[in-house]
Image (cartoon, rainbow, N blue to C red; front, side, top):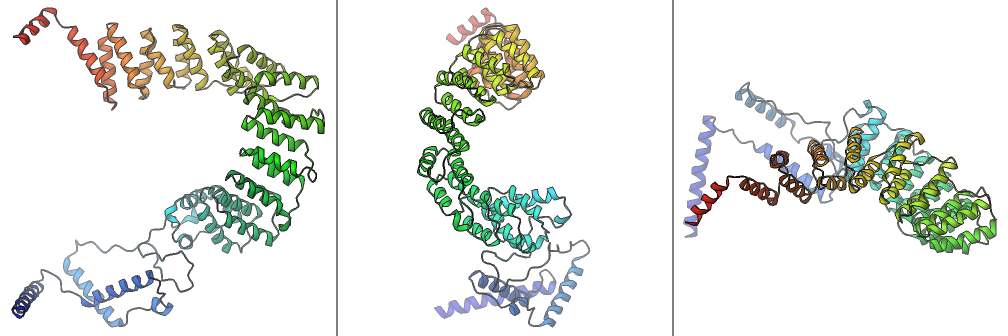
Length: 572
């Protein structure tokens, strides 16, 4: 039975071959080219072998077909076929870019050969671009994680020419692309003769540390040491990177091994370490290390200022008092130590001891030691948060009397304090006087006063301020919109709604429902309907509650006799 089945299949194959030969003779289908299939299979086998790790010899990779006459014959046949197909057939598309030969056994690891249809992410004539455009384009490529594979080959094929300034600018824009920045740095070094500038090296160290590539960072430090370009700035970057990664112990160990790399351990380097730790909220460890090294590195004014700034950042008033007392005992009252006084008073304010900071302010002034503008701004902000309007006004007046010009942020803090105390006249006075002191109102300024006026039911003032705010191209925030839409005066609410509709930014649906209800209750159903239709035209999905409210209003407006007859019909 198996033999009969085999003969049956053989007969089928024979019939299929006869049919195929007839189709070829008629010209319906083209004649198969076994040599082309063989060459294609060989190419696929070569690619598979290379992917598995079998390196092809350079002679085999670059060798052409074994029989050139077959190649010529095949090309002639293809040309004849194209002529037969007619002049309307489109020519074959040419491959973009030059052909790429297979890499030899010494090719760099991690670089896969690119296919002939590879599209280079860099433009073909990148060197013809301006300096800024080249930097921007290459930075975008380095920021794309998909371009890491074969990055060096991409750069080679682009023909990009680099310079020291170009490398520095690209590195400045690649702080989040550690691996790509490192590979570009190494590739560019081949063009520059491995002579990067010290600034480029420091940028690389900073980038690798920021992306937590600490092993590569230390390799770069070692290379800089061999070239004799290692400096305190390099170790300052290492301190900062470790502190940012919450590795205070590693930062301290780096300081201890500085001398092994030819950098002296001096007070400046010591303060750099403390500054890095305090900047990233590790003041306690910084202070413990400073006390441990007190005999070797006696703290100076900069040391105490750094430690007090750390206390201010963390709002640690108790530690700030202790450190300030030690500074006064060791250094005395020095009018030049303004940074330390600012940080100390600021730490008291942020630690919730604003009244205590004002007492110390009087003590400092009696010793002819004055803080600068930054403290007064911090104190005004802290007092406004505690709703201590009189104290904040006193500090604000003192600031002006000393010749300091408040910033817009300081003005906003003072205006907020006045508005919270319902002193809108004083808030208006500050608004009018901002420009004379070089500060300009912003969105926060207008929204704070606008909300205070609505709470105080000062409709005319609120309308006037709203028109001024929108004329100066400042938009009301969500709180201002909500308060305006639900207020009793529909004129202001309607004015605000027109602004909302024009901008296409709508508040929460609950606020809109209250506004629609208010319109309907005041006999303005048509206006409410127009608001809903306007939202629907802008693609806003209106809630069922609002639609039901409009339908209810419509039914209530019908003739009473018609409604009663309808109820009778429904009853029967």
